[in-house]
Length: 157
Image (cartoon, rainbow, N blue to C red; front, side, top):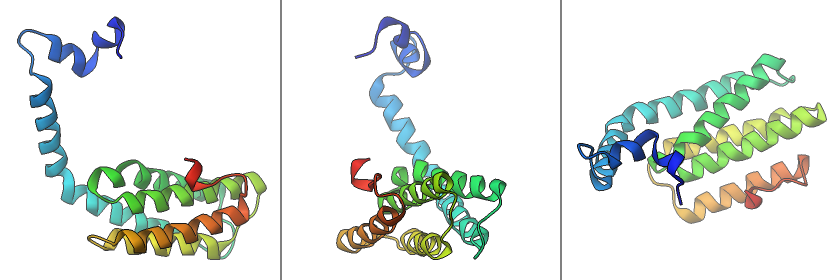
């Protein structure tokens, strides 16, 4: 429930105005905007996944590259599910967890990061991965993260 202060700002204030649009129209416009952005967002997701792959090396990345890896993964996580790529978003979340664990423990495992990248590449490229295949893949990533950060689990998110 919104309080009065929240309703005085943003979309809620515009909807409440006599000359504003109703909530149904606002949602319809938002859906149209999301649909218009779909191709651009899918390209951006592909570019982010590709850049993640380019940053993975055998040696631990520099601090700026580690931040970039995390930023790219977080960006994929933030938008993937809006465009029907929920499993890709979950894989990006898993990579964020893994990178966080590596940062905390001051360690690096290129194979674990590459595995996440490979999963993200598959999920990004697949138009409609099956729920079973996606779940199997995500369970595998969860096991990898658990090996490095046993206190953090994707299912707890």
